[in-house]
Image (cartoon, rainbow, N blue to C red; front, side):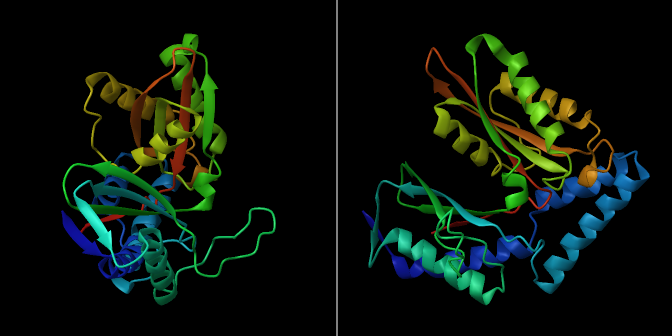
Length: 280
């Protein structure tokens, strides 16, 4: 049994909060750059150039890529042979968020109650999703999730008879209806199966994948390609002003479901597809 003191978790989270908001991942950055060459719309091409330049300035000057520095979402893989010592695990994560958002001059966007709307002042509490896995390591993925893209997301309980065509229609319709609200070009996370709540979590988890990666199952890898092509045919384009680059990628995650159910979730992610990982 390996022990990990909470004092090692908080500074790691603090660093992740700042790095994710300042430094766009190479996979997203490179896909944005390549989209400039394939975009046919002059306006769309100009917007993509501006998006890339913005990411470069943020990285060089260590300032946020976007003023919306997001809801603090964490995907945790905790080894079953790891013992957290010295304090509360969730509080160690939240303290890292407090420090990172304060010291990094990141906007605090969380209200403590959805109806009273009083800001917590430190971007906590975070959303912490923990998966127990073999081993003795702690993997932390931090993803600041902006409100504009999150607001364009949806879960739909399709009928099993709707099949793959019903799924495609829902995903494409969701992206088309979103227009420029989620700041395209977007990354589209699609969760299929599970339950009402699990399928939404799968859709968000799909956004953590590297841009350009393929689903390990051939059927779903082809579905991702088909969905990306259909989404880009909507003509929404960069920032919703027209063009062929509506999405950088469509990523699908799947889980078994009930015989009477066919839940599908779409979680939208803006062009600032920010996430960073650390392993302790």
